[in-house]
Amino acid sequence: MSAKLDRRHFIAAGVTAIAMPSVLRGASAQEAWPSRSIRMICSYPAGGQTDLLARAFGDFLAKQLDKTVVIENKAGASGSIGTAEVARAEPDGHTILCSISTTFLMNRVMMKNPGYDMDKDLTLISVIPGGGLLLVASAKHGIKNLDDFVAFARNSGKVNFGTYSAGSAPHITINELKKQYGLSIEPIHYRGEAPMWTGLLEGSLDVAMGSYTAAQAALQNDRGTVFAVHSKKVDALPAIKTLPEQGATAKFFTVSGFTGWAVPKATPQPIVDRLAKLFVAANDDPKVKAVLATFMLEPALGFKDSNELYQRELPVWVESGQALGLQPT
Image: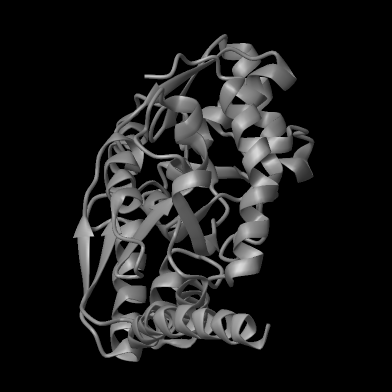
């Protein structure tokens, strides 16, 4: 009897001895992170808001981790090209995605096969809530508020309203305003904000909608007038009311959108947690603070708050995007 017990103990001890090296190796690898340079793939072009945020936060990570952080711009297909590459990467904390709400929320509506499943393939680490997007009318129309816009649209018969892409926040805003007020609004889609604001300056658009920083080209030349902001007040324009404050009722006017960072799904949680804490710590870095101030953005959120924001806004974005009636490409 005792011989059998001893044999069982011997076998158990042997199994434990075999298992321990792999456990120790895993712990050692985790503690050693990062063991090489980190790739931060920005799924939008160089020079834009997403890219500048990626570079500012990447510089902070590099200083804190004492490793090089290489920013790679892999733009195209509404962010899906770079995002799919991160989703396929080794889940070891050495590949990070920087992208925006379109990538994380809307591509599932706009594309038949974006090449990744946000919920199955990626883990969201940290997000920066979006700033209030400005609704700007050509100054020649004399539009000062939402009521003026509605009256103008009804009197003119049709409004040319610029967006920076199909399925974007401006596109959804157009659709919601059309539904509530029974207006005829024609969305004019551009490939980015810069050409859209040029369209307003040149007089081919009645209205355009986009970020505070990019809109300065129109505002500083007195060619455009801000008459509303999408979902939240803009500190630099405290007198301008949000769409809900002016009577717009769509649920979409309660969401902010965001810029965010994610890693492959199986990345160990301790690495995810450490990265999330670093992104929050970066809010106090002078370079990061300067970029956030330039784009009138709030600080980066931690892991829990970021994922709560994602889960809260996801159904509203999906429902509003589906209401556009676009066929996925």
